[in-house]
Length: 148
Image (cartoon, rainbow, N blue to C red; front, side, top):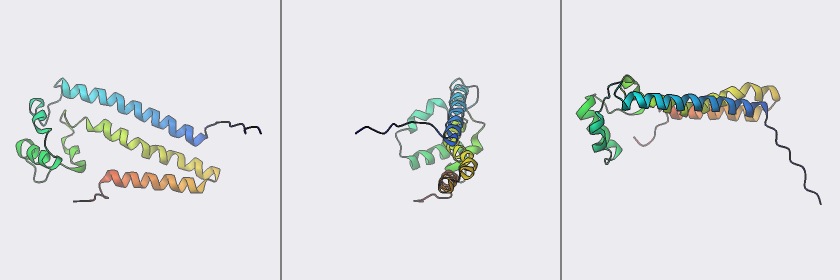
């Protein structure tokens, strides 16, 4: 009995997904190096002084947020979710931009392949790609937060 010959050929949608993912990863990685350098070399001032930050690392997240808020930020509410955007001008928070890019590129990949899936008649895959993009976007938005 002969084994069936397996040929591996990526679909146009798979190639598009991979190309977008690769470009998004490269952009995120380059920005990660740049924003880290801005922070480490003190080019951008930090919200929390570099010399103080390690002293808070042994705390549970909630206690850390309370201490950081009380000692440095002095906000009415703890800095959670997307509130880091208010601190985007600070060297220690600009580092979140590449993390957000790296996290969000998958949503862009899914949305990019949807038209091709519909054109090919793969309605089920197209609907799943849309659902995945919506779920990821909702999760990132904080609207689906649990346990508060």
